[in-house]
Image (cartoon, rainbow, N blue to C red):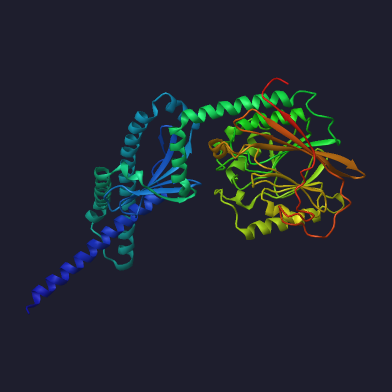
Length: 510
């Protein structure tokens, strides 16, 4: 075979490799520049977002920190798009939605932000390609003595611009927002289909829900009037009264109920065993604003429905004292507490058994570390966490189960106030879960506080009656080493004590 064709083939192969290397250099430079200087953020109505390109062809991923992502295949392009929700102005969101301005404003601003994003991507990517090509040319000249043609360096930004414009243009032309009707979820947003379904049900039954809310409001008002009547209850035993609540779950009706009970029983302290909210979002804290307005300290032990973000918000933006792990002093009491393990995450799922067991051991260690000070009350959200100290502490408080019970223990009493918010929206929809809370009366015995009586308050969500049941407690003879029985057992330490006097109220004036 003649030699010249071989030389031409070799020459063509060398040019092809050089062109491929040049193009790869341009793309790497553009990618690095976009990673180091991502475009944005962009205001889109009341939402601030930051967008970036990804190597997931055809996919759009919406990131909602800290809850997870939702993704859908939305376009035809060799590049994907990731959109991070950076901030939301909830006041503006509510105002625009209420005025009917949200949808048209969002549509216009999304298009404006998209055009700005495309322009910035092309400019930043082109600058990165130029810088990479110039750097590669300098390295080649220094290392081998060969030089890249100036035209190759000058053409680098043009090549990057053409590639990026082509990819973004194809995405723009083929983009289908309707693909998000069936997105893929990750993180806490895996529960989004359930939440959306719940919202649909609430909207479809808005009239029925409104009637139930009105019934709840009437019942709570009538109960408050009855509770505030001075002749409603006999003398309060003991010298210290503690209102014990739990599992409010965003129910605004519980706010007035807690305040009224605190004032009616003249309590010195409110202890909340957790699950103030449902999803642990900062927005939810606004639903229960005022729950700490009774004029006495309000202490919250986080439950599995709290989150790190909510705990930070409550710690700096409310009168609620969030108890961390260890010992605390309030109203003359020494209180041992441990937050629920799940409150350290953004998912409201119950922590695994091994984490609950570990939390129980930490609570026991805190009690034992008290030494001569001795612990008066131990609080944990999940009963499994509270169980290890039921033979060491005169008063143990838990929540989570939504069942109200009073059980004697070798050391004193174990209280679960049930659900002060009637299980929140879930209970409101079913109408079968009562509002429950307790008032613990403590008496001074030598150098420590001991439980003297417990008043359990139960109110129907949609009826106008309520009942208060008082259980008198004998002072404990002292702690023993015997382990408590399981909740519901008839053995000592697990018995539910139902003896006591009951006071009933109705909707009429006192």
